[in-house]
Structure formats: C-alpha cells, structure tokens
Image 1 (tube, rainbow, N blue to C red):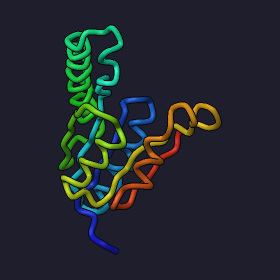
Image 2 (cartoon, rainbow, N blue to C red; image 1 turned 60 degrees about the horizontal axis):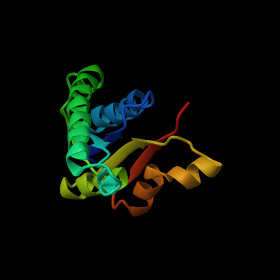
Image 3 (cartoon, one colour; image 1 turned 60 degrees about the vertical axis):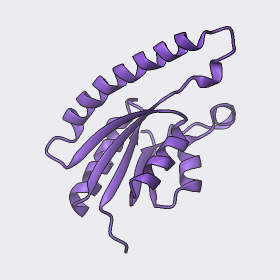
Image 4 (cartoon, rainbow, N blue to C red; image 1 turned 180 degrees about the horizontal axis):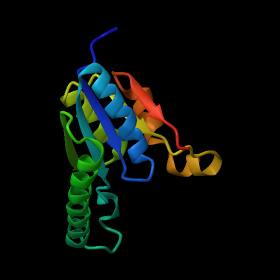
Length: 146
C-alpha cells in the first residue's frame, strides 16, 4: 500500500462535518499523516449580471469568507487539537477547489462527507462527493450521514 502522509479533510461546517473530521483524525493518527482541512465558500460569480452589482456580490462573499475563517478556527480547535493539522478557506466551486487543492498539495487521501441526497434533490443539486470520487487521482473516503 502506498504511504499516506497528507490527508485532505473537506468540510462544509454542517452537522456531519465533525463526523468527517473524526475519520480524518483517526486516519491521520494511525498513519502519522498531516491533515489539511478545507472549506470552500461559494464564489457567487455566476450571479454577476443578474441586476446585482458585482461590488455587492464581492462584499457578500468577503463576509462569508470572514465568517468561515472564524468558524474554521473554532472547528480546528474542537476537532484537531494536538495534531499536525491546518485549516484553509477558499472560494469557488466545491468539487473543483477540492480537486485543485489535492493536486497542488500532493494529497495522498481525501476524506469527505456525502449528504445522501436521492432522487430529484440529487438531480437538482448534484453531488460534490461523486464528482470528487470520479475525478480524484488519490483515494477518497466518503462518510455518509447518520
């Protein structure tokens, strides 16, 4: 089995994120791996031109990122105390940003949750986890909701 020295834990700060963090933490401790925790804030750039000024969208995204930064700090303190772990907040489309981060940081494994959507919800909202699993060059551990 290849060495797993860098784990990416992708979170959305939902109730399930702590469960995903538990799996990443367990894997990190067992393998002596460094853990990177990533939250992707929506860019909202697709709304430019819909009678919403770009500056308003930029301000709103800035507020989301600022809030996410403080949420990430609290999340890291609560879930990764005493481990070699870092938290990062980026903006963009979740699947693309997760895959880009994994590639750029030479991640050996991704741990992420699924929302367990079925039927019309899955058609309408898609699946970030599915896109990551299908496209990732490294193994992906998905954690289903309770």
